[in-house]
Image (cartoon, rainbow over the protein chains, first blue to last red):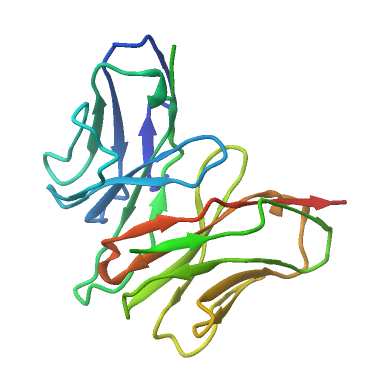
Length: 117
Length: 114
């Protein structure tokens, strides 16, 4: 399977604990995106990378959230000191940015569902 | 700023009928793209169809077509000959040139009735 993969698929944690999620994009894709989706809502953009550079961060991404893509391949999203409001589905997507900069299709992973107790 | 509006929270459609899901957008960018995704209960977002702001013709992909009316700023998804497997959440997304601003609508839950 050459699609986007995310691990773990589910995570239950206690308030105050740190959690880390991983996303492996489609191998030739240079852009990687993180979204958060709460029940009944559309995905909300968090951040994205072009290769290893983090190019944009939403103001939704508080200082408890950090994302990395150290080698321009897989990415991790860490949430420190989790709060109950962090409970959501965290989606990762990847795309191949063309030289012309036109809109490219994002391919999504299955998501990581986080529940903070 | 970009804003995507989907005004239909839920729709029920008889199997084999066509269905139109509404999406309107608001952007000041001259170059943008509009995407539709399907999200079944499993949670994975599945890309369906894309329309660029400069595309002269409406996009089509199999049973999916996009009714793009630039003057009205609408990009409605049309599903022909609906099937039971089409039951899912459908999201419209807007992106400006280079995918630097990405916004999703609140989605429409489509239920196909046998």
